[in-house]
Amino acid sequence: MERARLRRHPSEKLFGVQIATNQIQEGVNAGRMAADAGADFLDLNCGCPIHETWKRGLGAALLKKPAGPYTPPLFQLNISTLCGMASVCQYQKQLG
Image (cartoon, rainbow, N blue to C red; front, top):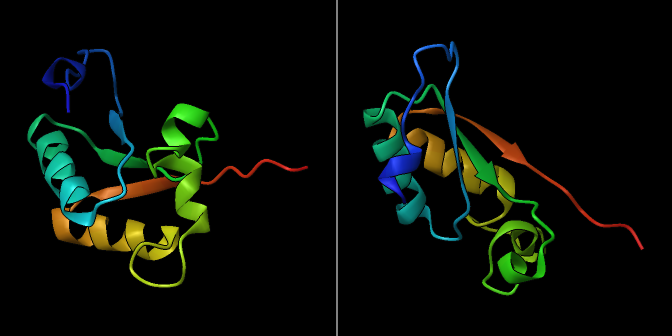
């Protein structure tokens, strides 16, 4: 995670950090870094359809995971619980 992107401007009342990962521990570590930087919430990207993201197993590729701890709802719950931060999760599936 780029620490330069973890800066909160004094005018921001609410500050969140978006991450894209397919590993729970990596998400937990990023969440803890975000919390240490003053973030209010973590935004987990589980829906980006961009090919470069998808082919690395990130974003929308998580929607194709079989049932288990890496399905987006459980993935979000695991990361949020383990890093102690509130989180939101983006879901975006292309039609067609």
